[in-house]
Length: 138
Image 1: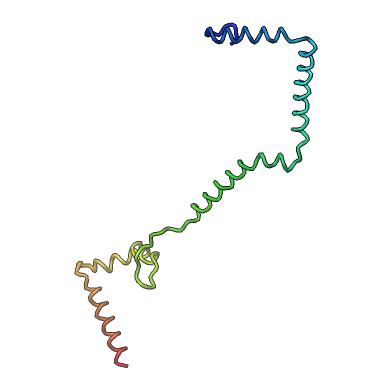
Image 2: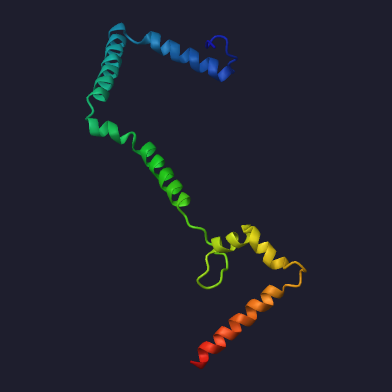
């Protein structure tokens, strides 16, 4: 979009006209010196940018590297976090043992016991009480 095609207000048109007139009133020699000074400043700025020490250029990447390191740290902390909830188990029992009992096909036969009365468990309870009673007597 060129400046001529823009819709300008009266103030902007007047300001532009005054600025153009003031540029035309400047002496050619002064205008030449201003142009030379502008070109010298641009050249000096481009050279000083190239002459910066390597460690100074590395500092421009510090914010990006810091953000990446922080993201990796957060991901690592969250990834290696142990679960807060523990399943209740009997003392000395391991949860995998419970799963083994459930997956064992022979264990179901013991529960059903043919007639479904659960007499095996009654017998096992009696045996454990008998064994514990004999141990306390000795």
